[in-house]
Amino acid sequence: MGERLEHAPVLAGGTAPLPDLVRRVRSALERGELCGLPTETVYGLAARADLPAALDALRAAKGRPVDLPLTWHVASRAALESFAPLRALVTRLAQRYWPGPLTLVLRGVPRGLEAVGRDGWTGVRWPAHAATTALLAACEFPVVLSSANRHGESPAIHAADTAERFGAQLSLVVDGGPARLGEASGVLAVGPGRFELLREGLLRLDDLRRTAGLRIAFVCTGNTCRSPMAEALARQLLGEALGLATPRAENDLARFGFELASMGLHATTGAPPSDGAVEVLGPRGLDLRSHRSRAASPEALLRFDRVYAMTHGHLEALSAKLPPGRRPPLELLDPRGRDIVDPIGGDRAAYEQAAREIEQAILQRLPEWA
Image (tube, rainbow, N blue to C red):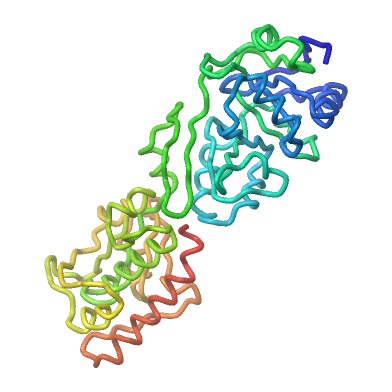
């Protein structure tokens, strides 16, 4: 490993690296050597993730404790297909912040990253640097990057500084210009029961929650039976999908950025739920007695990301109620396109039927939400 600095013909603004540079970086990493690569946050030390000796060399160069995790750096969102839990929620975060300064720590350890994952979780990031993305895409093996600094020091933001600090420990350093942001990425752990900002970086927890979760409203006629049943069942089933210990608590869902509500197109504000709705949800561990109806006003509806109607008639009325060009996505709750019949005035069997249909529709919707 004789070269101390490679002045690569790469611009931070997105010019692709020349084929010779790609070949040299790929060959060095393939052999288990270390390279310095630019990102938009700071410079990083890159190593082949599926070679334990390369990871040992990386930790030794940084003076990094063995138990501290390393981050898999990728060239596209397709890497998320290696992780199953909370796929929709994680995808929303990646669509908003990738490529960019957000490391996601996800439950699961993809093949080839067994020496990188910690306690069944793996950190992954797509950096917003065109040259490094192109270099990563050219590698047929997983690559980790760790900030170019020894443990406890500030990271390097220039290629020359990276080379000076690590010298012959690196095979080469790609000069992509000064790191644009000069600050390490935010690190967010997302998985069943967990939404935890491990390092703030440039991102705020409230913004991450707002991106990850959804504000969901359910609408029927009077907001006394179908839509409140839908809200309560959705709260329970969504909480279970998120791995929450107390899935019916509003603040637990809010941890993941979710807000659920129900309304009625012709609701009388403050009316209690129907006795039938209370009775059929009780055995499911859901208590509707504190529910009070609210009207589905345009102002209320416009706060939500998704609005689900119980019937085609509700859907038409909602479309007419909302101003053109300012409508949240409106859909039937049942993705098969079936109306959920109003059980009001019916016997317990009618309410049981409505609850079952609502529950089945929500179960089909869950993969879209979380």
